[in-house]
Image (cartoon, rainbow, N blue to C red; front, side, top):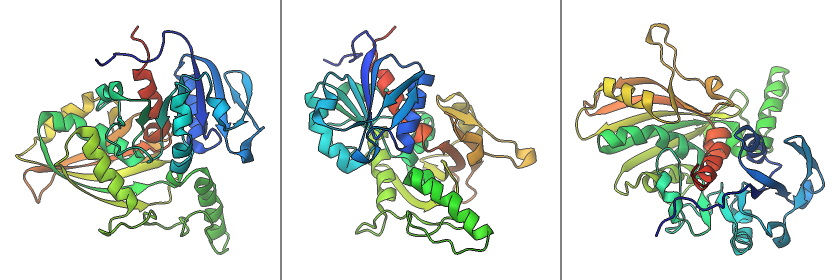
Length: 343
């Protein structure tokens, strides 16, 4: 039998694994901002960050080095330290009785691990066996927008091109973008050490490893994860992912084909009322969502919703969302909130 909640009706003991990274820092801020019920917060990281302090809720917390003992007595662990770290500590976390909400790709496609976007498939959390995966950032943003449309009419095919910020590669990539931009403006060579190419006044196809089908790993994450989240295994979806010189918000150009015409007015109405979505569209001023509109904000912004003039059964739209927030930390906390006792 499925349970409507998992956590006990009391403040929880929570840990953040990878607390010193960009997503870890956002988790700390959002747990406080959203008044998540916490009795104790443990910040866990590698030896490099051990002993550093972090301010949280008027306290100074000392970052601990991750170990099996660090998970004892915990109810919940948010992991955002990379797939290899998550795989290394998975058993220690679940054996300690804690739920692992993992931000890496390590477990996303495992059949018995729920892959959850709370606005899309909240019921999936009740199937967990100790581990719940947080989807890829671009997948989260896309599925939040696709879901209300798919509920109205079956989607036949999706074509998406992404414009992904430096934050997707971590805090160091964000700092490097700032530094290399200054280098270019001051006439110095822009030599990247974090990303394979400089992002300063530049863009390049996503740098994740190419697969045997010549799609990169990031593109295949979008394709496979979207199908799992939306429970549409036969969905035809193709993606091209691009890294662009933006600090922390992703954008996506999306073409959605249905089996029959989908009125633009209906799409507007559905998206306007969809959870986690806001419309930014002023046709008279040619004003649509931009990364700066969503930076450090929760909603996915959508605009330029239009008829595809090459296909009467397809519509096109543009979306932007904060990669660190809704694309990672916020979605993870929303997953945890689904496991809290109903008030």
